[in-house]
Length: 143
Image (cartoon, rainbow, N blue to C red; front, side):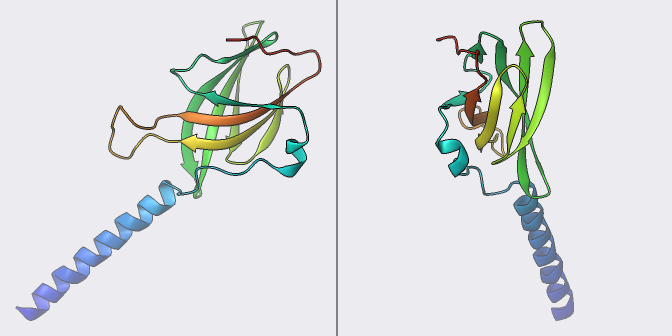
């Protein structure tokens, strides 16, 4: 009887450890990074991008939020740039990564707020904090 109980305890501990490891790997704890020093000297602006917030609109188009996922223990967010021609270009950024989007400027993903593991419609969900340095000639339209 003692061996059966020990076997059950070992199986329960292995299952709990495996579930905890899976959660740790797929739900990274790092959800924000500081602005890189080389961008801090540029004249950019911070923006929140979310489905319930008006998109960032410029004279060249609009920046909207796309899906968020984790891969290899890091967050990857998708930004959707729709230029005035109606062409939508998805851009994937790792947390802290900077990229240039033609017609918009340089965009850095600084923070993510993923949906909770157990759905709760009051918390979290696809919010990104980005830093945008607009291209010359592109102006943000006031909301």
